[in-house]
Length: 289
Image (cartoon, rainbow, N blue to C red):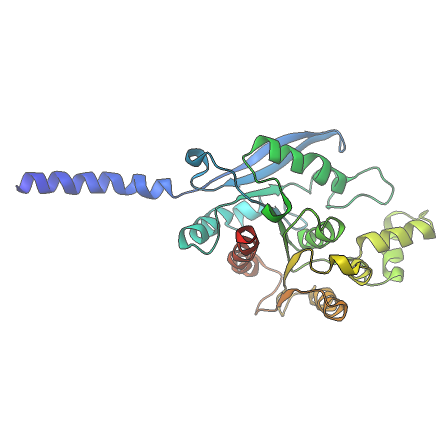
């Protein structure tokens, strides 16, 4: 009898690690896709949920954007996306999803099309990256199953992408976002620094298309509820002003949104604290309808 009990106990010990292992997602952080628009191989990282290889079903997608100075590995290395997402899925606070983290640090830094039209990263994102992801991976390729989030420079990308393409995303979660120029004069100062020969019409076009404040103030009424917004910025963050101004503009424009100010600054400690809330927020949209 004792021998049988020991055998059973041994079997449980052996099965335990296998059971735990089955609940772990996978991250690949050095993948590439070809880009004709950017004339280069572009790197990206991806998180695949724990049951991706065994379920055969399709998943919603979160596009998660890094900040200036990082690349596609930022959310993997410093943001702990694997551990945090695995835990959220295991806890039932997030639905299983694919998370795509593109590199916006190679060649030129940033998520937007260049004012001179010779480096069109935003075009790459929508015309090449998203179609590539939806062809290569088992994704649910519809608006309600896509979300976008990001920090700092990537928070600015989150704002602009969802404001430019509200038909593409159910939710958008900018964190500690760089919201672009506050005024036309600010836009001119920023552009002239690197493009001394830029003309006034290009400055105006750039401001209206890249300033989050301008995009919110010019938002058509029928788009006010097109995207679910979760905006989060620390009370000690140096980008607090832009985020607060966008919050106020959205309130005045009657754009529904969640606005959170927590204790903290422009740090990975803050953003690691934000990520579980982002995963829960986007999951609410993935579950709706």
